[in-house]
Length: 121
Image (cartoon, rainbow, N blue to C red):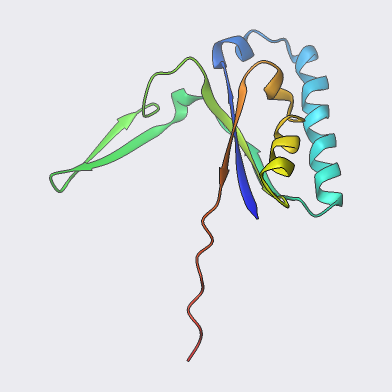
């Protein structure tokens, strides 16, 4: 089953981390991606730009409204994601616990809805 692991952290706290201190964290992410790739569990993922780069789109009464920034102000912001193939929720939880941001932020686990492909006639 596929799971999206949404990585939340404080952008303000991350901005205070010096480049020299970031490198071991990035190394830990790379090692985790390599380990998961080696077992076929890692399907994709990426770090996201800060929420200041975000754009939110809503359609209300047939009119599109575009605003700068995230959908809502929160203590933690969505900073990236892993898309994994896990055997079950327990397996996904085990992977989420290995994501470096879990130490300071949080990881939201969301199973993907698998759509049945229409058979070709």
